[in-house]
Length: 374
Image (cartoon, rainbow, N blue to C red; front, top):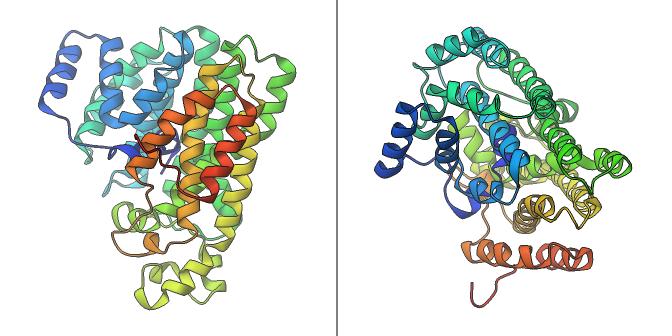
């Protein structure tokens, strides 16, 4: 569950992410590959791996939108490598190194494309990694300074992913709250810094002073969404990814263990063990709201890009604190499709008003927000 997951946070609420490729989309992507059309390939593969993020990216203009798109796809490539089952850590490490070397060395991109051909995974993700060379070609079209911002933070993320893959070769098992925070920094905090650096470069309304203010809260903004994702998908991560992010020390303090995190007879105990992470999520969400409100209203596209996942996160936390579904095999916590649609309508209407955003967030935090015509 990496930064790619953070960036596509809203996907799991509206349309299932990581779907098989529909025949018509597969044909269009194949045609783009045959034509070596990097721009078209990236535009088409994005909704295949995250449909709702494809909606969000449309609000970001020009090189900023392209930079966030390419950064997302690069993170998703690394994420697919990290999540591939049955692949030894050292083999993943080789692929990680080629992901990073590909920023400078065409031979590394060739090795990467060859190396990922045998990876298991979902069809859309495999289509992306099999044609990673087109993502690098698209990325190369960006201005040099923009490329350096993305490269810096993607490198930081991938180094952290490699560290955790080698630390836990048989599946991630976070041991302490400090280690949990370290993990979240690598897979989400890095994205918060990257996005904020990109805002500063591309948004004229974000000057040096405002940038420094945003930098103070950008990590909390990103990590809030990551923690909400982890909390709502405890069972999904344990069963499908063989990863448990709830720290062992928290579970043991309440009389449980990671090996019993989905045990029916320990449901109440395991729910109590989530308390520290729930408190952390609420704290970071409130910091994330301050981050959003610190973005100048003239940067409307950036505010909207940040607002929607924040609203979904607040709504999810509201439901999560009253639920144990995430601790039941096959369970997760999802807000209703009607609420998702309602927030997608209300968010853009209020995004330029700080007072309006505050009221909407407080409303969502208290109870479900569903418009009659949604």
